[in-house]
Length: 82
Image (cartoon, rainbow, N blue to C red; front, side, top):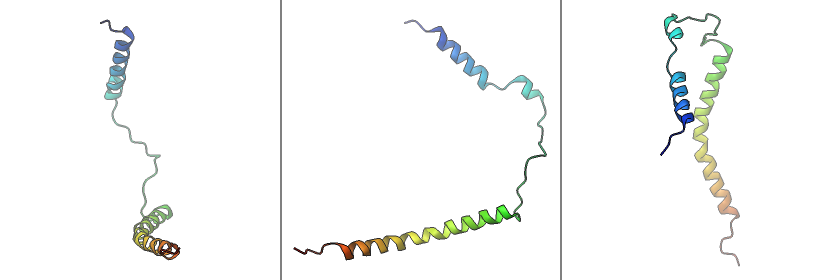
């Protein structure tokens, strides 16, 4: 069985791309001071906390909705009427 030379080239390219570059490993880690930081007192953080709190409380509404749907279905179903 003959192997295609393109498959071996593809594997070599994959290995070269996945291995860390020597030039990157020699540079020290640089910190970008222009990135935004998380401030727990910011307006966005307060909105996020509020949204999460609402989502946690909304889970408790699901059983009520299910019971309501069951009652509505039971009331509007045919109870053996001919």
